[in-house]
Length: 215
Image 1 (cartoon, rainbow, N blue to C red):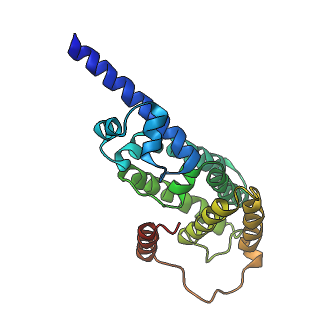
Image 2 (cartoon, helix red, strand yellow; image 1 turned 180 degrees about the vertical axis):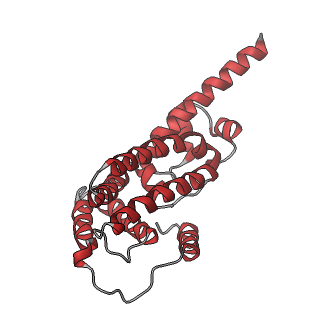
Image 3 (cartoon, rainbow, N blue to C red; image 1 turned 120 degrees about the vertical axis):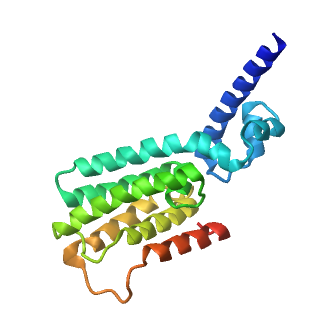
């Protein structure tokens, strides 16, 4: 009987930690203090580590479902658009909207924090993004030299913008994205002075930025 009660208590604590973690991560991002999550759940920090073991395990327990659901819906709407340009532009605006509205998703999208499951999610997201980009390029609507790696620069710059203007000017990112999308139309294109990053180069950049905590 005592063992059953202990198991029930452990399950309740785990559930409370999941709920608290998702709330705190959505409010403050994936680098939020774990002690705050434990306090919000009404348990000790030791209980948090006993239940999950590490920040990465806690993130993988609560964030991938949120990120998958949110990013899948944005991609679904973009792909459903008959106009390839509207699909591309809608995808960019939709992802940036997620960044502006949820610090946890901003961290996921800008690759500020990488865990095993989030890395797997990024691979799936990459395939969808390449399709959305390729479709708009094939129709001559998106400039031909724009790559999926270039798209990550868009999300990185938006990540920084929403972090630093969120309180004072929460809609500043919309103006920035509006300028950018107008410049990405095929008819606005001019030759660029540098080649796009390769996938290997992009992976190296993401690793360095994540290591430095820059994004």
